[in-house]
Length: 443
Image 1 (tube, one colour):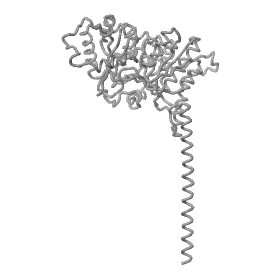
Image 2 (tube, rainbow, N blue to C red):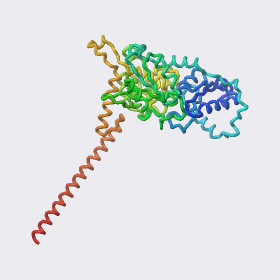
Image 3 (cartoon, rainbow, N blue to C red):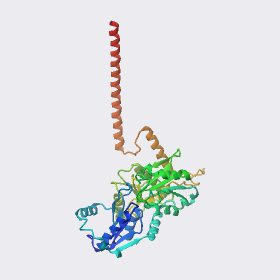
Image 4 (cartoon, one colour):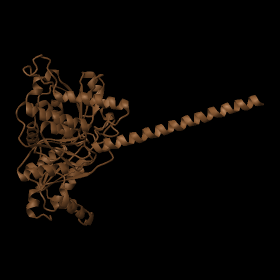
């Protein structure tokens, strides 16, 4: 209301995940706003979070509200706010919202249900599904690659009982995936998340049922979304044929290299490309971007800050955004949304795993696997070697490396001192034994 009649007419987009009571909370929030004369766009059922972000932009809404607790346990629920650009608000807007919440009386300021204006609720359904999927599929970097190898590809997918259950499999099928296997116990939305202590694709335990299916169908790739389908986790077979998680840092590096390489090979790399990552994300991105001549921006944690960089470039009319990501399994590609997108990420991950066959470039006919697969094998191999050495799996900054060297030096000095002390104690014990022998002889 404080933004005026125009903002009320533009309306607010609503969405929710599969959690218990999410749909009821979603509907009730919309009813409250209609009682204040605000137009509301309401999905006819649960949808992935990126569809809400895209919907805010597509319908020209002033804001968006998503009822979700993301990848937290089933007892939780939450409320995500989006602003008119489809991103979560920062700066003055975020402060204004927080101040308004703090000053509101939940009893006096929330209208009763009988004041709801149903005429202000617009149902959003299958038509927007088609629009979103087309926007998502437009972000392919190797069109028709999946169809070419469809017979040999086997993919296992699980939405972890969440909102990705329908849209993600449909997108994968539309890009050409024939052999798509879902996890029966997790493909149906269920707010109790049965068998999942934490419905979080960062944890290997979330893949337990997916691994069973993958072993049955001889698949080497398992894709999992969290309940609101903004994050995506992946398991792939390592050199021993065992399933191993690919971390968010590793997958972000793989996607960067895959997208950049694909654009270069097709002579489609824009003149002014850029990517964005958060400060907690691996510095491997810096090396990859430098190798491909892509400008990289480092921002605070959260996709709202990635969205700020994109908005600034759009306002200045410069730069071509290629990828944004952070280590917590969130990735974004394309201009249609401003939040991490588990749908487009699932599509790109599937494509990045494909073999690339180019006999003119590789006359030996061995059908070289795409560079990202080589990077993946290198990453998994490095991770094993690091674990055997007891080193950290994380890619470290220069300061962290220097700190580690100093710490190792201190530990080495400590061990040397302890060795000297041990040898001195040994010499003392030996001298004491010799003295005892002398005393015995004298007696």
